[in-house]
Length: 458
Image (cartoon, rainbow, N blue to C red):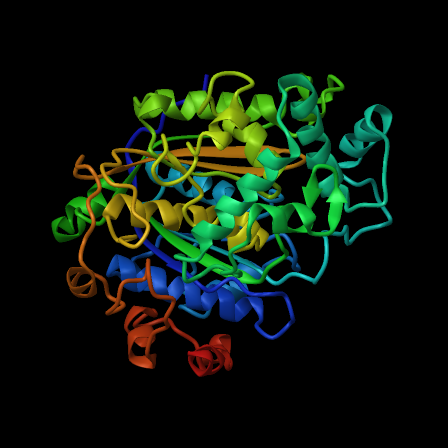
């Protein structure tokens, strides 16, 4: 059994950059800085209030985290660099919650960023054993190997097994992608805002049956940040309780022996996802039937299908029926990936989990007023990394209320950004940035020209 945190932890502020195609035009220092300034402004604090920092990224040299955090100030706080494959961002959030809940910190800043290369994911090290090599070996032994991207084969095979066992059709996977592309139109941070018909998705270039190109997430550059605080920190700022969102339940799980039981579905972490979800929901005191909005790890439409089942959002083997019935989008039983998901929003690995957190925080606050799921009392987040790790998180409002749409005018007054960040992907001024940097321990040398580059993009 996982030990419960000693004290509650809240998400007080969040910030995002737009997710963009990886073309080398924006560096990780800029992505982290932009997201961090926005989160600090949203939380109405300065970097001097931060006790510890967590940097989340997969591609980059050691201490990239310090390079990003030093731009806010050189306050000598502990800074941790986290890499846990695609679940890196949520792993950073989990670490922050452990710090706050365990009494080691009152305020932790988590920043995820990724500067990626175009094309499918590749290993950077060819002189040592690949940590996912056993996964690939099991795939080769059970399903064979094709010329498609490694991850697409793995998740595509899980989709094939779901078709064989439960009767799902190729159209069901395509429908998942169609819905996510539709959802992304209302998310200003999404890499893509294109809407497709089911036929267009199915006729797109085949990647690995049942997956076509439009059912696969892109590689992306992007940044995301969150401020995690304690009860004492929040009590000292009672005027911010309305925007604070409680991390009511959370669990990080790794693989079970079933991962290697020759099932393509289990190879993709089905059991650890189910275990993490049950544990997080139990801690939060929430029934899965009461969940109305979910952000889950749809790196491929096939993974959304099996994850709907793993999280027990449907009866066993019935995820495809939920899809067919329209029960994963507005007007159905619940809304999955209102952000557009990884498929359309994009997937900068280190930022993804924190971006999911930001989306759900905006829903719980009522700020995502152009895509809100009304009456939400709890939201569920699922972030998966092969190799493997999964983090499932349950969020509730700090004041215990249901989410209701908040007008933009009120939001403009409540946030330090001066606009609604849930519906507008805008920037900030130099004055706003200086307002949240350390007052006594900032370094122009550490900043270099990052602020100038970021402000120029706005």
